[in-house]
Image 1 (cartoon, rainbow, N blue to C red):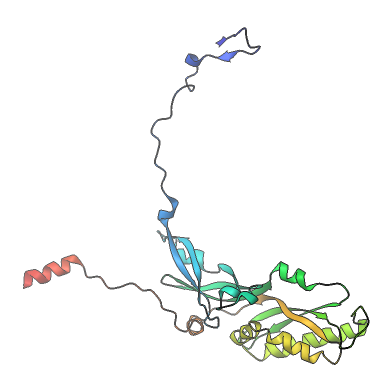
Image 2 (spheres, rainbow, N blue to C red):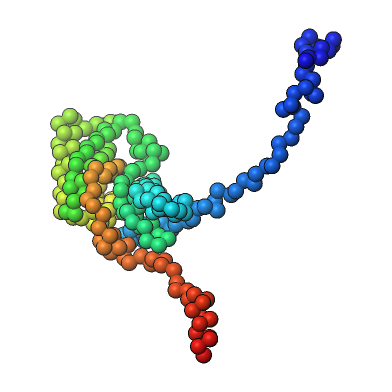
Length: 268
């Protein structure tokens, strides 16, 4: 039934006739805090970085056939190099990707997975009147990691140069690109992944490229701007523990049962 109000052109519903109208919901169930089913894990970086503790990550507690370890393995964390070493504000533009390879106790042990540069740093390097030169190459380390390295460099003014522009010719650009590829292959193929990451931190490869290309055309701001992991070998837990320099694993403490203590007291 509808009640028509002369003041309004549309009828309104009568409250008493609709069973759902005007009734409050009964038996409101208590909402459980979802964080009660979660637990926190420490994320550890390899010992090649001065600061090993990255932070914390969260995972659902193990229950039944579900294991919290399964949700933690292969997680990737992006960390600034400024947070991985003390007084690293000048290197904060470099980002390292670390992937969880093993979980020990409440610690997630990570390994190198990739590297990149922040967008604002790349944009600040590009300028007018200079040539931008890029090169990339696939390399394989001695321990079986297949990586793809991307290099970037810019020309710079020669001494006593009066010309406004500092553009390199096409032949010079090709020779510089060949030199970049050769230096990256030489630096990466004769070492393992840990040693190669050690070269990424102080930008050793970029400095070597500068020296090698000085006779072709002087370069400035030469960086390994990006590293991608194409293929990785099977995880070796023993080697990973060595990489983390025997990370302190929280295995808990021994607790004696109460009934065992009571039986000892009865015997006495």
